[in-house]
Image (cartoon, rainbow over all chains, first blue to last red; front, side, top):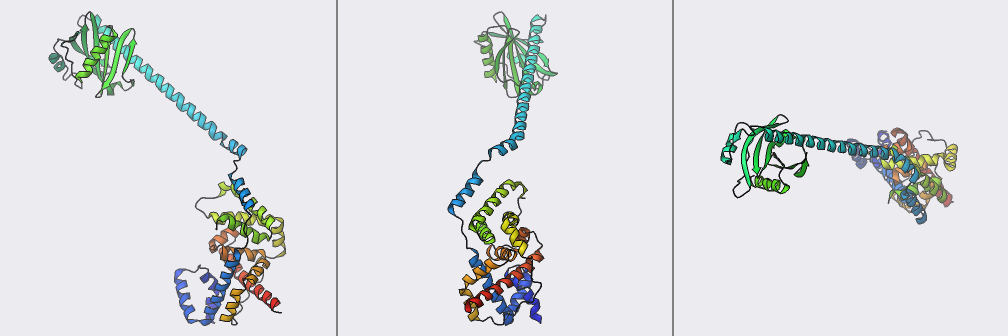
Length: 251
Length: 164
């Protein structure tokens, strides 16, 4: 009997488990075959009956509450032990990062100190030299052009009128194999050196604008437009500050 | 209906006892919490938790008893009884006897009862049922077919008893 083939698939059809094309064919057959249609209807009725009676038991509110409590309750000890290795490794990682940071900081400080010592040495050498400057001029319009082609950047020499400072001259200085400008100023009997370097050449010196002393010389340093400025001298702190302000104002 | 209530309902259907059902659900949740790492995200959570509940039931005293006394997939491949005597009247009658269906379902062996509930009430796909019961899809289909026949027979039997 041809219907036997179909009845085998009745369950799958009404359970929605037949592939789309087979389901379409089945649908077509159901329209034409009264026996299969009746059997199908009976099965759908039974399916619905089970569906309807399936929902029969409801949990006690007290039981529901106790389950919710048991799920929400923090499981102290296993949780603690489980996370112990994570906690330990996190602590170790934090310590490692912190010590690396401190080491880095120390390294930075050391290299900054080295740089300052080098600059102070150059300043002292300039003071001691018989020919302290390569371009002798108090005219800033002479000194600035002199550096053209000698250093890979340009800078402005401050206007010194109405100030106690006198421009003595300039020379090329070197730090970490990078050329820079050294300007020598005089205030009363004190000489001060202003070093200007490209920041790129001083990658290790990361200190920001700062005031400090090195080997009892006063030092002022700041950065501007990719250049790093150092003012070094044995004049008073006020004098260094004033000169620094003039240079900063010149940009 | 939230999963918790469905789980409880299913547990009660399996155990046929409120207290046992509560124990079963409690243990299921405890196992699910403990073994949550074994659940693979992206797979069927419902089938996973029903599987835990069912396995817990099968290893319980009631569960062991129910499977020990009823051979699985009993009944062979009998031909479907022709539904020649089904008429609109008899269908109407069937609609009215939900009470009978409920009683018959409770009387069915656990393997039939659970597969019917998973398919009709939980509306699980054959694949989901296969995962939950840990049997091939083909077995799901044949067991479902036998369970439906058994249910119909039991309803008719109960109706006959009531009629006489």
